Image (cartoon, rainbow, N blue to C red; front, top):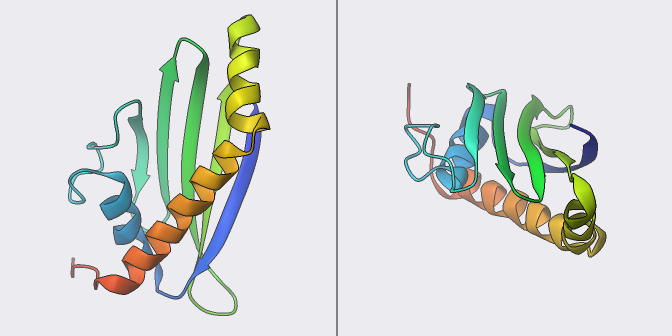
Length: 127
């Protein structure tokens, strides 16, 4: 799939807390990474490192990857990468509506901010 973009934020929490916040935000059951939102399937869940989701519908095939790294200044760098293909004429129209309009950028940035708030609002469980 072609690379679309990456958005990142620095979360003022360690990677374990940020990872748990990713799961609390993205999964209906944060103890089970398989419980991702409708339209997605779990591709990979590497604790404290990477959550990769895939999906498809008639207008696109897509992948959303969350990457967690230590930030040199402290905290966690949380990035969301989007990869997607938009086949055919309807795919090009859909891409223009979702990516070209800036809507995708707004949704992803808001999602990262929600995850950052979650990471600070609840302690991560001890495992």
